[in-house]
Structures are given as C-alpha cells and as structure tokens.
Image (cartoon, rainbow, N blue to C red; front, side, top):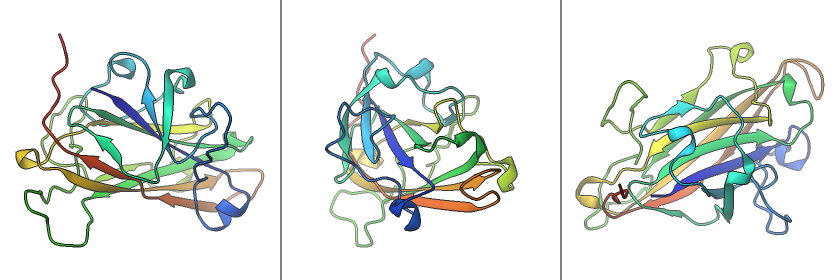
Length: 221
C-alpha cells in the first residue's frame, strides 16, 4: 500500500494566472517539497495513512507536515497506482496574503479515452468510491466538489495557505481490468479583501492522469 499526494500551487499574479494555469512542474527547484513544487505527485514517507484515514472522502482540517512527503514525480505522465493505494489532493497558494482568499476546489474523474474500450478493459469512470467516514458505498465517485453555495462562504486556507482533501482508496475495475483515468482539477479563488482585487474571482485548471491495474494489495497484519 502506498499513499500519494497530488500537489498544485497557484498565484493570483503573473503569467500562469493570466491563462488560468496552476504553476507547472519545475525540475530545477532545489529540495522540492509540497511547499514549493507544483504539478507533482508526492509519496507519503510514514507507515500507514495520515491520521489513520481510510477508504472514504474527507476534507483535511490541518496543514500537512511537509517533511512527511517526498520523492516527487512530475504529472507529465500517468501515475501508476495499484488498487489499495490511497490518494490525497492539495491545492495551495504561494501568495503572502492568503488570509484574504477563499477557494472552491473541484475535480472530475473519467476514463475519458474518447475511443472504444480495449480488450479486457472496463468502462468504470473512477477508481474512487462515494464512501464517507460514516456511510460506506460501492458507487464510483466521479465528482469532487467541496464548497459553500456562494463565494463568501467558500473555505479559507489552512495555516500553510492550502486546501487539502483526502480522496480515499484506489479501487480496481471489474475483473481487475487496467484502466487509465483523467482527473480534471479546478479551483475557483475568491478574494474577500485587499490586493490583488477584492471581490474578484480567479480560476485554475489541470488534468493529471492515473493508470490503475491489478488486484488489491493485502496489508500485512
């Protein structure tokens, strides 16, 4: 079993903001961590899962310990996952005035090949399930949508300027078919006061891929 964190960083100023893009992966970043490397998958360096989280969706309410995440790899190719692995998604800003930001984080998962299924593949559209900490479910979770109904009620950032969501366990498709999934991640950022522009909305998007195949790995007792 492995735990992977998908990390995206943004700023409300500069060229990336102008085109609605999270900061791209930078291979020259010295000592990359979740605090300074965007568009990257990080591996959890501690045994088990953070805070004992399980096979369900949950919003993280404490800043993650950056020293517990390492071995970053760029999202330019599909991340290889095994059923039984876990995922967490973290979006953060590099801006100093994050106390004025509120953000709605969304993601849509789909097999999304746009073509007929290859032999042995499945049309399952997400490897995640709809379970919550109190209500298990086998239905696939294809949409992640965490926010209030209006910009002013969207969540504020955690102490490290981030918004993080635990996505749960990766599940195999029927017959353990190997599938490739696209996760279209979006963030809408509302500036409640101050610079760069109080009352304005900014949006960012990206679309990493994940390759899932094989049987669920058994965790040693």
